[in-house]
Length: 432
Image (cartoon, rainbow, N blue to C red):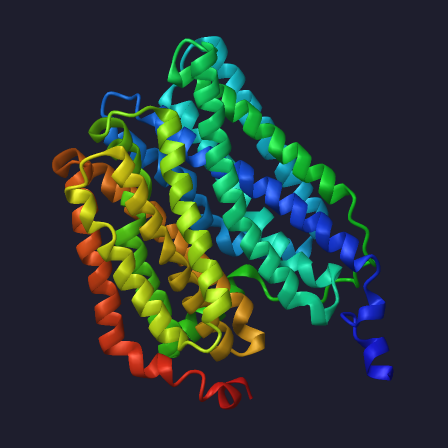
């Protein structure tokens, strides 16, 4: 009993656990819905530039690179300041940025590219601390034994928010078009961005309702550079962690640029559809992701996570190749659902391997490196695809990405499969 009373995560030490968990879930659900609205809108506005594909690539790069630049700093801020207040400040800042961008664009009749990418950069810079603070705040709000359930709920809600956000944007754009609201797709997209800003106000209101015990004074921590150096050294010396990071970088570089840059131009230039169709396209991918996540939750408990990861990578690539010949937008929706189905195989496989292998004291640093790798390489991939799509066109870009994405899984399977299969068997020795 004494140990339980002294444990800050013991059930009795966490007041209002259920209420706090629900409020945090609602806040991140609404906030994630807002995030889902943003990227396709930015891509569409950038596609209006004369060099279309290159501008989309640059815009998406700028909208994601702050996660690479400020990822470690975001984690440090989440550890050293009140996490709930930090999340609220991030929400308020994102609301002000989006409303200002929408108001400026609607009054001027267009959005200069510099203003667009500047806003995208600042918005992403505020999203990075929000995500880090959210993940770090959960243990303060709920009991230890309920952590897995709340983490699962937060992850599932991320897929649902993606579907809802993309579907909602598509519905709003379609309704405005049917009602004759706005003179162009660009004007309607700006109205959607203004609506997007309100999602962050709602998120902040939910966060204000959270009540928790007073946090203990923070312990002295090493500086940011020391934390980053320690994590990099561990990743460099540990073959499993290093392998996961390398595979993540290779697969994301091959796949993520076409998923963002290529999708905009495929829907707009190849299929001849409007802005709402782009959101439906991305929403169908999110539907596939949700189905894949549910299958893994129900059936994948005893599946070898290394093989789940490699199968996900191979199929992630192979499901891109049919876009070389898909004849219509409708068939594109079917194929993007199939592609989305295998994305959770990659995410769940990678996360589970890291959780099984990495000692508790180093997990935070390793997951920060994984997030930096995911977001940073996504930025570079989007930028590279902005150049490539000008020469290749969106269809060939998807085909090339599919080949290299599948190869990353096959090569990883050949070089690291046995090592990853051994992770579960050696978990106790590694953890000790």
